[in-house]
Length: 109
Image (cartoon, rainbow, N blue to C red; front, side, top):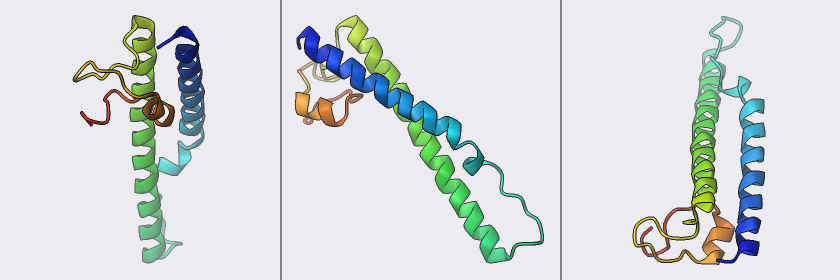
């Protein structure tokens, strides 16, 4: 992969990391503890708890993706970005465009 393409993927990864960090900082309240006061009914409380769990899971996935992005940026610095972590073959650029943080090629995935 040439230097121009690596710069493109670095820019994509850094942009994605910025978006995820912004989401994580703005979504702290939605994953907070559901207050169990008596003013809401049981179904409303259950709905609030379900929304909380969904927000927590989305935050967990975003944190995982941020870690993958950080690792991808390290691979760019080390010169191994774009190589499958299992078979060491090149990952197609179409796959990297869709998932710039990906570690495996289609065959190994």
